[in-house]
Length: 227
Image (cartoon, rainbow, N blue to C red; front, side, top):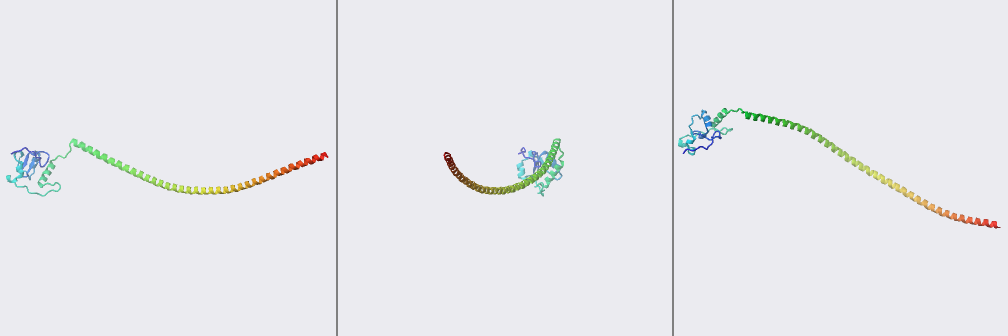
């Protein structure tokens, strides 16, 4: 029983098949059938309307139509197809218009512009990378210089600490010497104070003696006058 074809074309795989080639045992669309017939190696094949045959019977039982199987030919590694269909593909490619339409040409120009922009961006990035490398070297040099300054500063700190200790020792030594001197002076002052106290005591006694003598002299003078 005839059936409406829902099978895609074996060659282009896009359109639904309209014809069937018994020798190739493949369904073909109208366009690929024309290309098929122009190839000398397959131009004599038997082709029929696909709606007039039962594909399930044709594809499951080739002996019903007494059609010999197509001999297996060497595979082309790049296409993984038999030589027969390699010829078909080569023919299709030779007849294909590879020129770009206006829309595709515009897109290609846009693509060229994008590629050029990307190249310019890459050049800019490379220039920035060179600049950053120079800055990085300068930063590294400054970091090394700063490290040297830190080392020198640490040494100066150690020297200052050592000088501070020496100054402190000298001050303590001077204070000790001054303390000894002050103690000696304090002892001398104490001795002088005691001596002065003794002198005051002696002076007071002398004053008393003088007062007593003065009284005696006055009495003597008074007695002399009375006599």
